[in-house]
Length: 414
Image 1 (tube, rainbow, N blue to C red):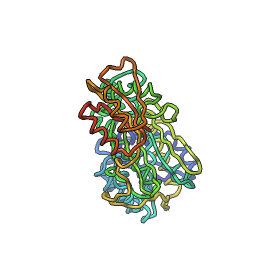
Image 2 (cartoon, rainbow, N blue to C red; image 1 turned 45 degrees about the vertical axis):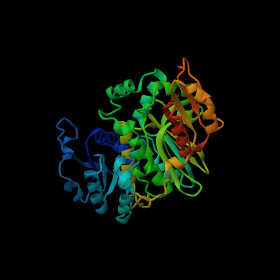
Image 3 (spheres, helix red, strand yellow; image 1 turned 120 degrees about the vertical axis):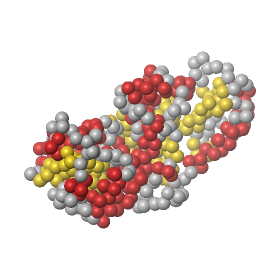
Image 4 (cartoon, one colour; image 1 turned 135 degrees about the vertical axis):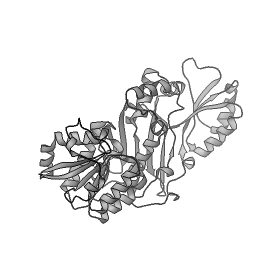
């Protein structure tokens, strides 16, 4: 049996990858068409209690210089060691698969080109949807479509928190604390609740379908830390739920719009019913119409499922590049439009002693709009949904209103 696979990183995803591969090795080898096995697990630590302790090594060069190794799963995370390891492996003609969204979002174009130049593959199905297949369907099954838009719930932690706020009337702070207790949120949840994680993922999807590297620095992101139960109630009364949505779309002039932010999603929309730690990606193609990919977006075995799937693909096609590619770009390029220049409709909540007296001024500023209510609304509060306008114009009007009332919330409509 050829021992031609190595795993870098034996944390949650790495241990899940080894466990799933070894558990299903016989079936996996039938799918590959030859006998394959894991030879090395690289980690700084020892794992004497692991059934795979004899595979543990501590020297990266052992993997790099072993000609038997065809595929390496990089699941160590981050953009330091992982970046250097991946470059060296690809330069040697060894395929690399990864769940490392930070690395793909930062260096995807470079690493894909390196793989292509050296007749191997760089695959990252697990980097966006965890266990949800999305990279391969976009690259293969939907390749005949012009993709008009991708929108998704790409972070299970924030979706769990918002679900608890919507379904159980928990405050953001209490819902976050529960997510941490259940292991859904890190001790430092910033990357999740401020939209950084979802931003990396939509950058990967946008780069893939539109063919040019979208850096996270190009994409506006805002998180869910300012969402209150008052906002949840107003949204519900108007027929919406609040979700953290990442989206990218091509505009008429071939520029791109890309943003990560909370949105009021109509209850009739498929994304509105995606709850708890589940993720979903909605893809609109000119041929296929709307397609929804739904499932567990994280977790040990769901993510390992995608990693192992990529390992199988590389072993089936050893010595070939599997053809995922997008062009490099510069971070100061302007092909992603400034989000303030995009048309949108906005939910706004005002607070102030004389806020009801502002209605004539609000109508004069915005024209036709919709006021919304909630049970026991205090007299010093007013909520409305603006018409579709350039966001900078909405902000200019709100800046005038801010002299007379506090802008307590503003959330984009979906």
